[in-house]
Length: 172
Image (cartoon, rainbow, N blue to C red):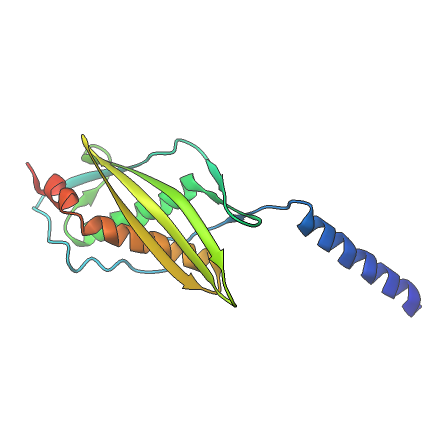
């Protein structure tokens, strides 16, 4: 009775190893609620400031990273939109359609495995009318999903430090 179980177990392990080795790719998920954005340096916005934050990717756009990981740049950008929107709302903006348009795109996701940790980084490009700015974020830990969520939050914080963004939103 144990011999068939051992054979079945070996077969299951072999199939799992072959599945991983045969090119299975995992899409990294992100969570906009994982980390709060630190926007203390960003000034309060004038009363009545309306902002519309748009995803630069119309649909899912998969970017392959090292190993067997990939990022959906539409989802990464959507996470950044939620994080940026919350930060701007805390500073007095109304986020919704019809405001000053900010087109965001998450680009260049990278992850590097180390000894027991993962280092994740991502860039954010923001189109503010005719002006383009970018921010970069990085985080390290043991959970690739949380690390990318933190890296996106850090990239949003980098965008909030850009004087071009402040000028764009406070200009009448």
